[in-house]
Length: 198
Image 1 (spheres, rainbow, N blue to C red):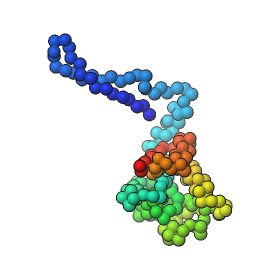
Image 2 (tube, helix red, strand yellow):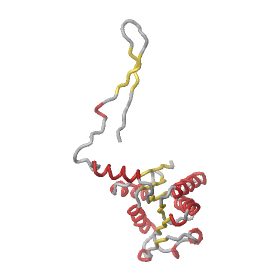
Image 3 (cartoon, helix red, strand yellow):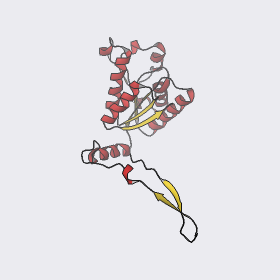
Image 4 (cartoon, rainbow, N blue to C red):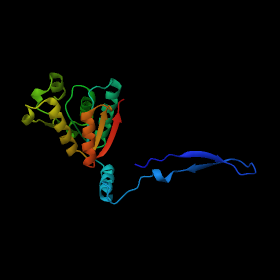
């Protein structure tokens, strides 16, 4: 991304004529695309093609600790994305980002929702199990039953990102697990939208 620092200066000639604005753009701050850059032309073309796709697989993941207004916005976003023909991929959760994404997708079209759990439905809290009733496409992982939830969740986030074309993530600056997920998506050249909550 090119960041430009633009300074407005007012110049006048020696005769006191009307001042005219001028724009000075420092050239040494401009990003230069090098041939050994990790984002080659082919990769950028692939990302552009993903953005232009009419229907995408969009992963929505993020923090569990969200105010109700943020949850409502995520729910509305998920509904709108599904109504446009996209598939939402997320994980289980009784509150926060994942729960809002599930509610929103279920309103629009349950068949366009894919929920990937870190472990099994039986290992989820009862309120999460209740929320997943009626979700037709749930992926469980009994092979992770003996893992800690934190470890299983990290693997789950990677699985979700592997399946998507685009990642939308809601997180705070201190959320290490979600930052790692975003970095993993960047390495996979996914289209990424990050919303910081703090």
